[in-house]
Length: 379
Ligand SMILES: *Cc1c(COP(=O)(O)O)cnc(C)c1O
Image 1 (cartoon, rainbow, N blue to C red):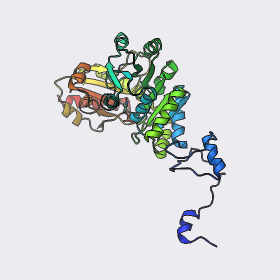
Image 2: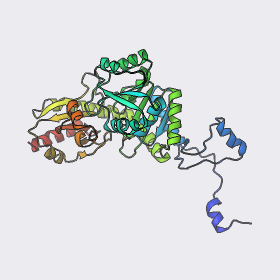
Image 3: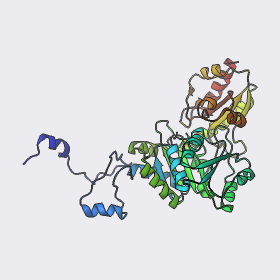
């Protein structure tokens, strides 16, 4: 007997043809996976490589975690719903109620807020210390300290972390380490290979590279990533297969993008060094490379009207994000660092005049001209 209409709608499809061999991984946009019998289902729990339920695991999200782990030289990696959820999973893989974290005082604003306002309520205490001076970090270590947490290139002042120093200090005191490698990306820096335990990315930024996803990746030591995976599964901070797929696509051009964007950034930073109306240029010039990262932060002179400057940037958009292929600018004081107390911003040098530039893949000459003209127009 043929199927009735209502049944045919759902079950008329032929069984999948395994001879289809797509060149790229298809999008497994499915909430769950099916099994031919109970033996196969039982096999899942014994690690037969099958998938069960997309919150627990999905081929697209796994592909991304594994791909970034390979680039970081790490044995394991997982993707999650955002950079912050990857950080949360990484932190919770190491600390529990009653433990203490030492974090860099110039951490990304959202990470600072998570530690200070959210995790604090669960009995996880964080001291924010300048990692510029590791002797200060050592002084802050307490009996219950479990984790040192910093960024490989800090936001927005682009301080390059002394990762070797952090690793040495951590080993001396048997602490775990977590580095946010979002700004440097594995193209420039591989903290795991230098001895860091966990490396986290807001893949929303350079890993994805096209400003079309919100996603995070955590890589590192196998046991810690396994614990972090349990947090992602149990707290429900998994990412959708489609977003993981888009990010895998973006990742393919990471090297090309970082090379072009970093080189443009260095050229822009050099040009702005010579501009009379730019008080300070923050860029890791000391790294002997054709550009180390694609972020440039400047402090404009007080004779520049900051709002006129932003208005005069023509095709360069104001956007509270970074790392896309188009050049964008942001105002750290009123966006990424809004949740930092004013005194903290002041102490870090994040004033009203500070502008963060995410340099894209346009021609360097055009980018430089845009900034020079905008400064001139807003005097
Ligand atoms: C954007 C960012 C984050 C947060 O990532 P989301 O994907 O927005 O959750 C964390 N760290 C750094 C350095 C960032 O730039």
